[in-house]
Image 1 (tube, rainbow, N blue to C red):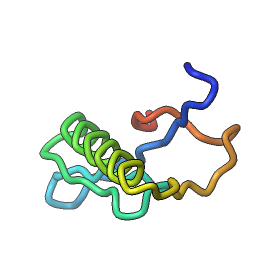
Image 2: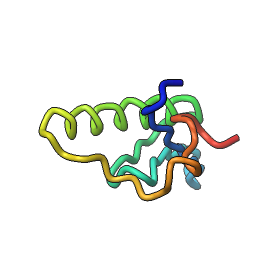
Image 3: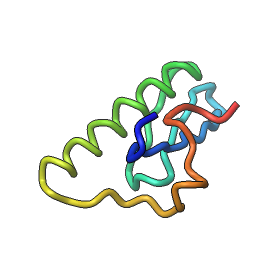
Length: 78
C-alpha cells in the first residue's frame, strides 16, 4: 500500500426486512443499501470512491476523524 494511502472501514448492519446497510463512518453521507451483504459492500465502496473523487476535484480536504493508525481497509468488518 502506498505511503500516503488511506484506509476506511465499512460498517454493516442488517435491517429487519432483510436488506443490508453499508456505511463508511469516516465519510459523512456514505450509506448504501443492498439486497445482500456483498451488494451493500460494493455499493458503499462505489459511493465512497465517488465522494472522495468529488472532494479532490473541488479541492476539498477529506473528512476522516481517526488517525491513520486506526483506519482500516475500504472493506467490511467481518
